[in-house]
Image 1 (cartoon, rainbow over the protein chains, first blue to last red):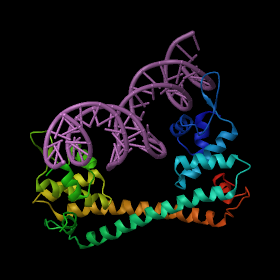
Image 2: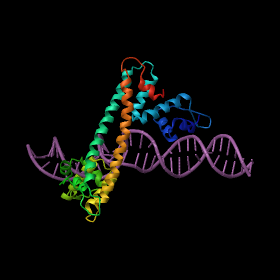
Image 3: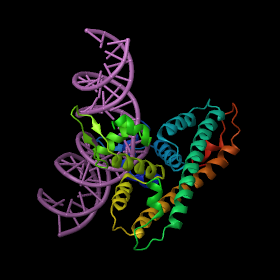
Image 4: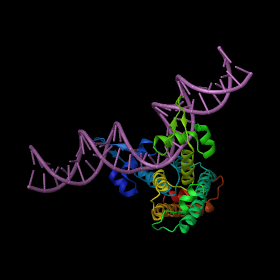
Length: 128
Length: 128
DNA sequence: CATTGACCTTCCAGTAACTGGAAGTGCCAT
DNA sequence: ATGGCACTTCCAGTTACTGGAAGGTCAATG
């Protein structure tokens, strides 16, 4: 399979797949003409990566998860630890965003949004 | 005031203040020795920026908001539009994170997290 | 056989908003 | 004059790609 094929099958842009090779996440073979050639295993890894990324794991997490996936001697506790760490980062981010959302929501609600210049949003930002 | 003073007063790191000058958000004077000298107006702007950033506005948004703040002829509708756009981006992000959170939460709940290798998290990532 | 168009290659630069660190200067107090 | 802290500039690194240029390959068509 060439890069276009695995791109279609995995849903990842070709650019991203090249990048993943650059940073050592996948190791496609090369054919005579210099084109990357992907075996099923590599396609599988790319799909794995794509899924992990949509769940918000960082590339570093993906590296660890992929290694665990390929390690028959892994302990599920190792995987769970990575996932739980990620989960708490997600929760933290959600918390921050919700706090922003709330403050900003109030400000927006109180802003007339008309042709006049006075604006509670700017007042807040200016520390009024 | 030197940069250390405004840093303390605004809560922004000196590095960040220099960066804001670089990208044209503030315009401190310079004294004989080459040190930046900040007037109250500039300190005020920095505080404004700090507040806007904690509400998650992008630097580009900040630029617009600051210009509106300094424009007596502004219409509050302009400010409100920027804030509402930002609000919907926040909502979008919260939505994405919550969807991740939910999926990942289920996976984590179903993972034994013990010394055995079988793991529903990896199964999911592998597309099982 | 030449050309066209899709596909592939590498390499460089840009994104957002800083942050860290190195190397050097200024200022103040002992 | 010597510490020590604050200040300066400049360069590189962070995250995870993405866009684009310049050019090689391949299969089909005229």
